[in-house]
Image (cartoon, rainbow, N blue to C red; front, side, top):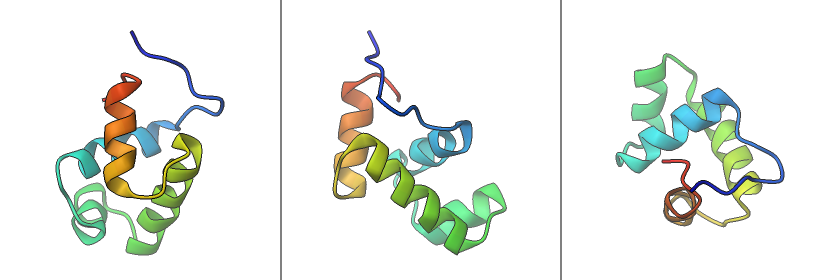
Length: 69
């Protein structure tokens, strides 16, 4: 069962998190989702903050733990 976050991820952040979980780099995410690489970095910063983690690996692990992916 998914636990809720204090501040939920936006649909774009959720989409980016799924691509991160697949092992994509920022450049690959940008190319896949037709975004600027800087925009991807901003979204990742927001994701890390909302999940209260320090890096991408922790983000994926926590997202799996709370049922986001």
